[in-house]
Image 1 (cartoon, rainbow, N blue to C red):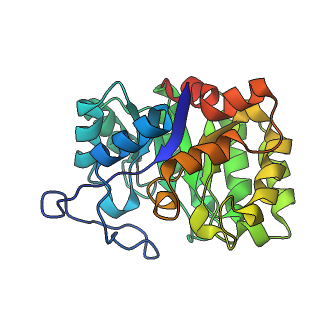
Image 2: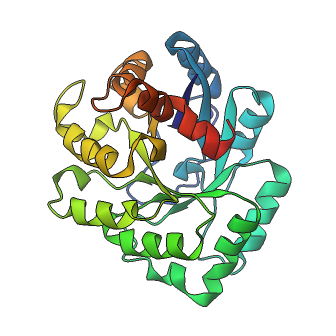
Length: 272
């Protein structure tokens, strides 16, 4: 059973669902990516389920994500966005959970410095709530923030912390191994094997981004790595079926390990 651990969707109607971008470097998209198109692509590629991650271009407005989850509960589980700088982040999270059964939350800390503020006493409420609600916590982050994530993983050993994305420059960072070692030392830290085709300088199968992910797999093991297509971004550069094949043919894992990467780890973490 293939589970795509990382996809985004947005409506074809920006009037019904207006853009509310959170990240200056991620502008509103120029083309729609409705859930119906994703389902058709999943069917062609043999993907049973996917994890819908709230896109930053919708900000805190989760209405479209919630509608997709309600309409297709057999195909999707969801990850919501929470603002860690909110005065009541735990209440924000509980309100989102009251509206929909999200399986995890995501924090966008990329390009925001060292994010050491997440370790402050008044931020504990968010991570306490995530622990109580048995949610995973995903990070869209910079590699230099690894010490903060490692410290959170140390404090909350029962909470899965997931590294979603480390920015386009990570594949050229000479110090990446040191940060990976720090994160991999914590058994509750997981890593997404994202087919970030937009970051590659070479065509499919994107050989230049392979060494970094090979280093990830070597340190974390297949049991803590999960494939994600980064749909629809990468799907604009090649067919969705080829993105799935990229994950299936990734060098390194055993047959059993490949099953973990391509679905079993995501099912365990997200209940997909």
